[in-house]
Length: 302
Image (tube, rainbow, N blue to C red):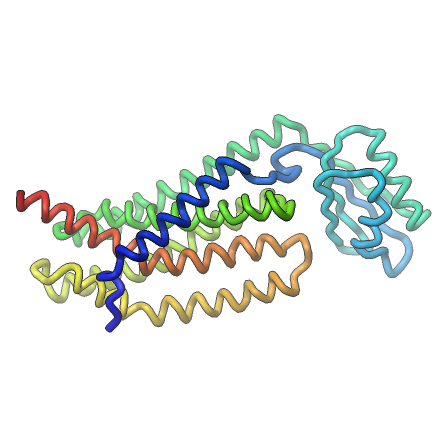
């Protein structure tokens, strides 16, 4: 049996370094927000010729317009969706003129503008959604584990899960702050959707471990060596956690490698979340229970 919990001091240090570094780069560089958060233009066009120009050809034709945050996504029926940071009619007319150079019979299907007030509301809702999801998870776990109170109270299970979630989210956001600063990678609404998905996946792994702790507590009683019991529980669920994560990682790698530009970084976000979520469920959430137990025991012995 692996001494996972007994070596928590080392994994705490790894988590602390990664978390502090992530907070630092987020504070210094911030995220490179796309038009979903900054505001801009969404234009959908349909090409008459078949095959339609590639994304690279469209990008090259629009290069001299210096469009900021330009993203191009193919749609059904020879359609193409363009997003860029500009909201004036003159710039949109220039874009249409360039596209008609590729296909004179090009049709403009729609042009939508995302204003500053809308983008601020999206940002506010994204932050609020993440916080409310974390709170709801903590409350649910606290309720679900109410019958194991004694060694460690049920609400501490909830806090342990949220600590692991914050660990996963902060490190993932930190990586994207680095990618945005050095490689210009932008974040939009799909990034927020991926973060919320990470919350669900990470807590799923954590609950599996916690549930095994609860089962072992019920079998062995509250007089059992709690540190040994948690370590045994983690070992009993270790292969399940790793095997489940590996199947998801393989799928996400396929999305990252073979997926289009529009979903590639959505896949990267999920990939980071799954990796760090698996790590935190094994080394952070479970170790938190033991740390809390030892703190309470020392307080009682004083």
